[in-house]
Image (cartoon, rainbow over all chains, first blue to last red; front, side, top):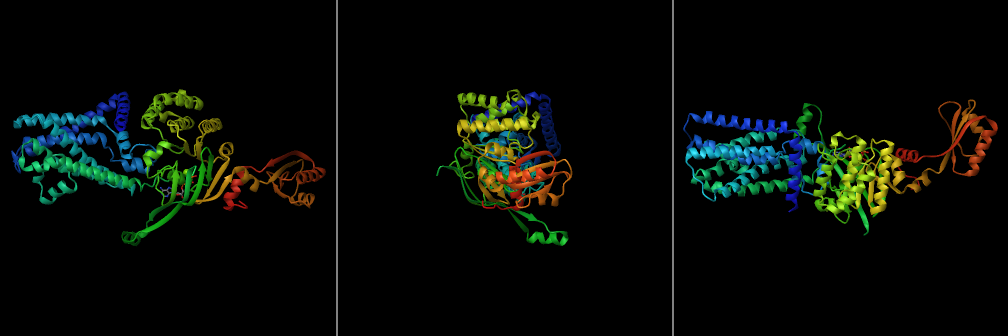
Length: 261
Length: 338
Ligand SMILES: Nc1ncnc2c1ncn2[C@@H]1O[C@H](COP(=O)(O)OP(=O)(O)OP(=O)(O)O)[C@@H](O)[C@H]1O
Ligand SMILES: [Mg+2]
């Protein structure tokens, strides 16, 4: 599998470069942790005084946030494509990418990876174990496997949405605020969707399916069997959205105009 | 079908929106957009055989880079047929680019932050080059280009000339049979230019590498290419031997006179009456240039008559340079008896 060995070569190079700038890396990890702590405190404060919100307890909310952090960390580590238009289209860096014998999206993932984001996985697991313990949840032998599958699905949902957005750059390189807006919308997925009205719930499930990154898969571990259907649908949605976004990307590449010098 | 590059009626149009002025214009833009279409490459056909070194020249904006980007699979043509190394560049892109090397002088192909050596190592992996081949082949390339001392420096710390030599080496890691060079000598000093030319000649002789290069420096072309393709506003206006171009256009010679005293146009013209001579004044009234046909009798006769009548400080016979020939062609836009 040559893509895998190319991946490790890049990852090795990445770590080597990062370790020579150790201070930068520590600052980044620290600011990530701080950001996660602020979010957690927000949840505790806002939902702390009501013990139940649309049928969800505080510990369940915290659990969902913990789960969300894991696919989000994986997405953050490999899909840093929020500045794709500026970096690759406007500056014409895509020229270089297209003269190399690897799929263009894969090359950009390799070039833009930020492995320190993966620390979010540890934070997320920590939060899940803590709140799971509070809730008295028990683990089955197959749960870790289900977990991996659901996390992969969630990360693919995120990746699919952002790859599709980045592809728009192939047609138009004008500046838009759509990327930051989408990051905000993504945050809605970490709260139970039944606290929202029907339209938002529909959007978060079928149009911009961020609910598959947080609530739905978490419902499986929380034993909320009324949501199991959605929970198991997570990997399917992930594969469909990511697959479509790659098709869209490939089509976009044929529309690439290059930067006039 | 032993052409390594085979292109027929290749065309690339860029559409761009132009916005109308004023509030009313902006409102109308909402409903109907104004498009302007720029034809960067206009039905170009060309064929290049294995082992050729071809110079692709033309003024700024003629469409050279756009052609190269279509031949390398970066841009999708608007219409036309392209076969390069027997493949369709934008269709089988990932497979295709294994068989070519590309250098854009204006833009780095290497990773900015990492050492040159590390870049090479990543590319070796990307192209899946076997160890033994890499070791012997790259050692040779590195030595010829003289880049050993640069290998452990990050690319952003290299000078332009140093970087360009590294770019060339990087483009050759997989020893491609076809090399595209878009302005590889831009901004380089004479020594680096010479070194790069020598290197290109060497790989062409050693591996039979086909090379298509664009440049604004005609001495590159004179040193390397027997064949030139000249592009003007997206169309080929000359495709043939550089020698032929000189024969058709540079048939004359110039005799440069520096007189001991001042001379006038009328005076000189009356001296050389009977011959087709074009007199032009040089820097001052005692420097004159006579353009004549390339014919020994005429040259001798003109010199004889002038020298007989006026005192001479200096005298030189020069051929019209390729530079001047090309400039004339650019100015007129078309080829005489081409
Ligand atoms: N991405 C683009 N969008 C719109 N127009 C473009 C684009 N790229 C090139 N052009 C236009 O196409 C024409 C040809 O450009 P090209 O870069 O091929 O010229 P060139 O021959 O390489 O010139 P130079 O010698 O300056 O490098 C120019 O008029 C240019 O403005
Ligand atoms: Mg150019």
